[in-house]
Length: 476
Image 1 (cartoon, rainbow, N blue to C red):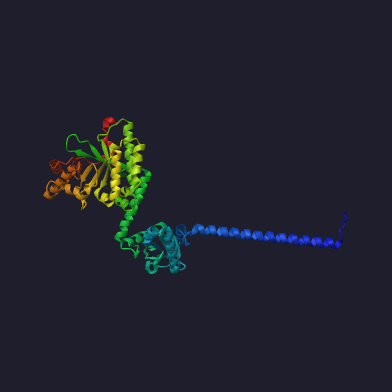
Image 2 (image 1 turned 30 degrees about the horizontal axis):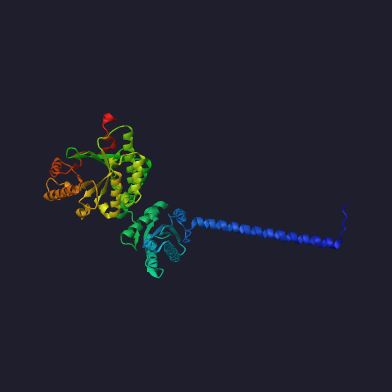
């Protein structure tokens, strides 16, 4: 039994005080937990917002757009879906001339005006200066009407930066699930394609996707071609062929031009054909050029390791305008040659006259870099430009490949003969070797010899063959 020496009243007050302290502590713990829960919920909300919203403009981002589009397309049988693909016109000019801060402010302002215009409809920034809107339960006509309102809204208010006024517009592509299908990817590609078509028509306009229109049929073929290119690059289905050049004078070294072919799904070999045009249009030629350079260097290195000599001393590789304009391409070529231990003198790089003139400074730099390294350079399709003769003095190349347009009737067209004769005279004066392309008959070959052309190339001389055919069978 415990006996307390404290008075009963004091003990009562002490117990009461303890209860009060306990209540206060419990209250503080409760409030703390509430604050922690609130902070956690805020964090979760912010995390969801960051995952679904563009941090700059605060509208939805591309991921949220695609997720929403997938969801609404599930009901599109009863509620048609229309996508608006919006690409700002003249945004790059503002961003480049005024800086990224101006570009960001412009995008924020555009997003706010778009939000006000589209109301409760789903708006997202798809990337860069591109936005998208999803409409449900309406047709293309309604979508085109809203698109026209958006263009008027964007163009209606100039962008002011540091006291200067800039006018920005918009090109908009409109595609419906009825026309493009129920795949989110297909619907977005269709709207994007229509947007590109609007830009090609002059910008600041609306274009509706119509799968039966020739423009969109061609674009669909291009997209299939691009897919073909991606698959060929990934699966290693590109194959190198070559076409030998015939020397027309004794003592001239033998050369061959490298050609690209594709192995199809059945194992057959196809020329690149239409998909090269698509590759040029969609900036994929740079990837193809790099693949060809690497493959050629690997093959030359393999022959060297096997102590096998091909029947030609030099391989000519075509360089596209995209690679010519790529300031990193010369370094790539140099490092690839070095890494494979290839003699640069065994390579020649062909650039077309039109590409060289279009990217004059880049072409001059590329030519200088390759020749200093020990490689040769050929100016292809010479004569196709309006100022061929005027530019020739600036291009310090080794070979002049005469455009087949002047060669194909050389045996019977006096004007072509006179033009080619002038080209040959000019080439000799500049210390260049000449190559006649499209030599398809004995009569044309004889005319080339009579004009003093150094090399002939065409089906009459040599047909395209696999690159391996350059090594004699007994050497394999």
